[in-house]
Image 1 (cartoon, rainbow, N blue to C red):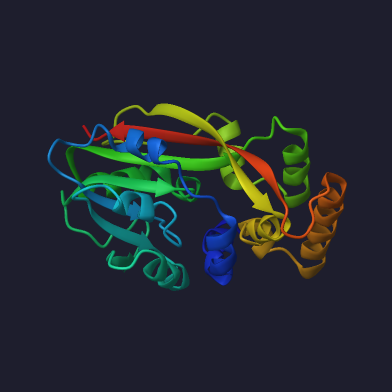
Image 2: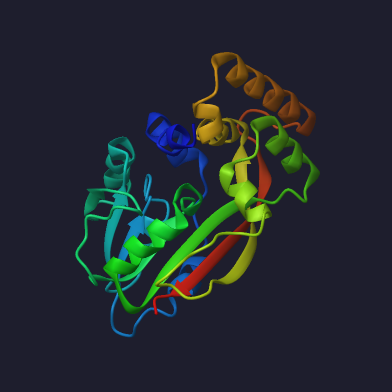
Length: 246
């Protein structure tokens, strides 16, 4: 079931692109600030539709490649971030040469990765002193309506992992450092539904469960007075982690 959920996103690539938030520039810059001086060869692994790729591509002199197991997600990425080379692959099996990168980053993806196998394979492709960066945008459930929204949609694997202490990495990477950023995203009723539709639990759920989720979301939005093109501020906490290759 976990593997089915991990590879389900291509079926809703359009909803993923519209419904999921961008990553704060400052968080991405922090992940990469310990990269070896003078080099910017970066792979975005589990790149999806390119939410993280487009932030990376804005860095001066960066050489970016995007890797994902799902061809539908990569097709959406090529439209969103033209010119970035794309390859099929996973963190455990990267189509890249040894010591060819200065950093590997994963956005909303490490919770699908075997940490020991993934760390070893990424370590093969990252040169000594290079960086492994992990990042997640997590809805801030300290706000009551956001907590109710998660209860309706079902918590994600990422949310469970972060609540249980966070990600783990293994050799050849050193200990993880962490920082977080709080921000809000104005979002409409339609985009909230599309965000829900892009979640692996919802994509793989039976039709009756999908109908229940939509119905209860609509009830919540009615209570909030969220109609038509109006928006509500959805609070996020971006949690970023980095580790250096020994």
